[in-house]
Length: 411
Image (tube, rainbow, N blue to C red):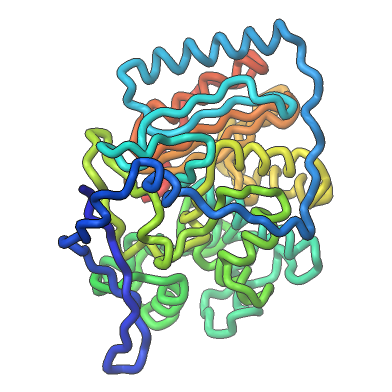
């Protein structure tokens, strides 16, 4: 039986509230008698029932039977060769023009139990969450609430890092160090769950002690701090918590009914993650920070996200063009980064738009071929290098696209 992680809020001697997490080693006997069906339902997100403001996505476009079958057979062959020992614990979906061609689910939300993963099972997509944070900021740009070249200290006067703009945060050119490392190095008490505000506060109060701060917009450095700060900016500009903003702006309108942003209140209902051997990886002090991670969703919900981004139903074409433009051109090669999106840019002008993710044992890929109107999605909660090999499937849609494999992202 898995020992769940619970979070409590206490008030310390200094009057500040802190989230504290503890492991409960004694479980109620009644919990052990919960049925298989109840376990499965407990890990599903409650459906969003209100239909106000729902965005109707366009229907799938016709697809030739021969093409459908060709792609489906090749996907099955790839799946069988990469996951031939059943070592995939999650979901995979491949679609073209809105048509689901290949869809496969395997394993359980809790390894060793019987809560079978299905199309409604939400798992952590790690850094693929950055695509939502980035587009959340771009929605606020489109609404006239912020400019990409505004400095962050315009909205947070205490942020004494001159020259760091909203664009620099989005394209990982801020020069800021990664909170995953500097908070630990400077002595964060791991009994307490770190928040986005804590990251901000330490950037301010301990700037003199923080190493590896660079001048902004000089080079690309992938950094989770950027997106933790962007989540705070979303909250500042919208007046709503980041989880609610994501729900109201994207999840609910697009009927992404299984999607949510994790907060400590969700600790008992989520699927935790596992290492490649199947060993449980518990939540820790870093798991309350969002924006850079912490979105839980499904392949089908990510397909809805792709369909929305492939239209002008939420974003105008100018905003999408800015999101998919390369901003780090100081090094030769096809790899680059836009505003919340990785990309490969080929000599013939073709682009492969994607993002990978890795956090604890969860990893994910979200690969979008915009010109070909195709998408490849894998989400797993048991670490597997095979998930990143999905990039080899892009040549099913365009043989000129690279088959190179991308590195993990997260820590």
